[in-house]
Length: 192
Image 1 (cartoon, rainbow, N blue to C red):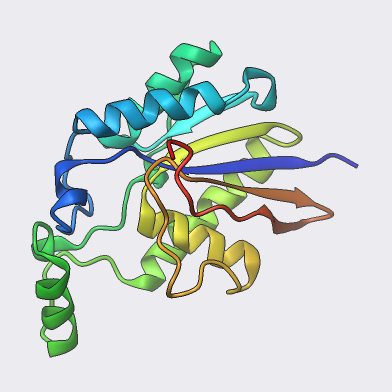
Image 2 (cartoon, rainbow, N blue to C red):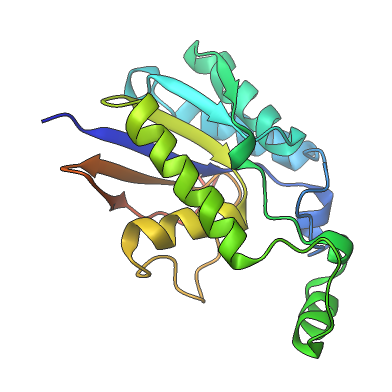
């Protein structure tokens, strides 16, 4: 029986994270703290624990993956499905502004629906289960996307609405006997 492991790591910190601004698919770079977090996380990643590193094409995730790969000796493969949820015209808003806009019921141009996000998350799980069968895959991505993947694999158990995924946090899923499940859920940053 082969087991496939998928690690889900959130990217390092950006200035928009600090300002609590909605990033979505906007390409916001890591700030100096985010670079430091990625470096600290890379020291906790053992090369033998992973066979491949995949990443979102957005620079904050891609750069985090590159820093880790520089320590582990892996190449980074860009997987478009790992991109963060698009919040459309709401990107750049503060969380209170986003909440007010979302709760207003007004249409938000360019907003990726939860159903669309769920389809992309399922696509990743399918890709890893088939294309990387029996491998240990470290995926560097984004908060909303990782939350959806975790919800699918845990049948809604993880994360709770109170759980905030820290920058460079790492949770692991396992695929065996045709089913995904959560091997360990860790919303805390590896840089702490």
